[in-house]
Image (cartoon, rainbow, N blue to C red; front, side, top):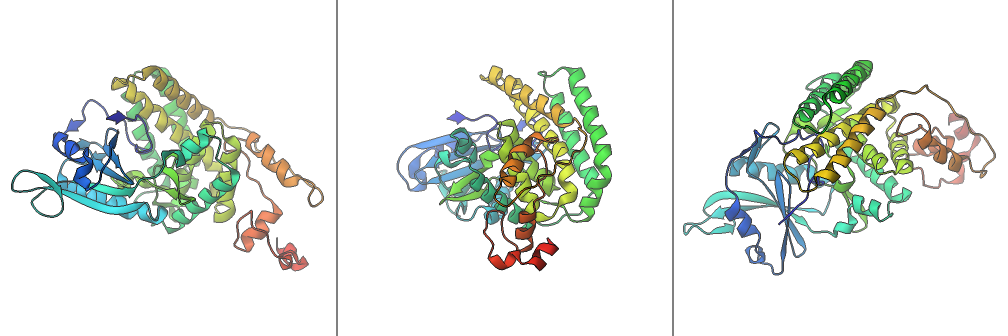
Length: 418
């Protein structure tokens, strides 16, 4: 069995698992059942990937994901019925952004002879989500390592995120500032479970976050009133994006806690932006941010991106650090990674003076190329917002930035509107 610390199966806002975690039930019989290919009517080896709240069994062309029988402050998988209900939610929530990937839910029962089997007869013991197994090399984080994240691919991914957010249900249960304040409280509790960071550094970072929240509170509340807080993905980083049949898919959203995933759409986007920036893909982070705003007309929120990215970095810092507390054999590497996220969170809370850079020139002289090159280096991450006449023109025509418009889109009267 292979343990994968901090993999994409871990949710973005999970408070770190601590010593009060309760393992409710011994899962060994079910794990043994799922570890044999014949249980599925298949042949071949079974590979098992494990996190602290789930296990994934890879066999043939299928992947089967089960919930571990744990009860934590942010998730309750303590009964078969709860695990079944969560599996059903996982399929329902992920299907819109991952067509063809999620196949359904299979239940596991114990028959009168005490044997485990898939089906409806006997006593419900557990449930698994059945998915199409895809090449792990097609995960976006693997593509990043291989140097295969292209601007065109990131533009396609951004378009899918825009569509996903447009369809996500609006939720009005708290003010926008109150929603983010809850996230900050989770982070503070997460840092309290780790001994990696100096107490004074953690306290300073917490105060800076609270000051930033006060600065942005009115804008956050206006956005909530405007319907920008929605039931989002919640865990939107590179490892939870894959290619299926050549098309990007968003998968493995947070399904077990609606409160954690009910967030501002830009806070959802900020996880991907932070992930790209942290990995050194600053140009792509800026491209994603600009493409998103080109297509959503959500300009009032652009100033929030550094703050949202800082929160995401802090989440990764304390979640990664907690694995050291759990006795991981990779403590040294994890400590370096956690400190990197911690430092990034602080950097993202800095402020710079606003700047306007105007670029002019004849058609085809390279204005767009120059703007794209400069943007990541201007202002706070993810860089400058690029306001370009041709992108405005294309947005007015309802097409993407890379789409070529017909000649009549450049008539004088259209240009005047632009």
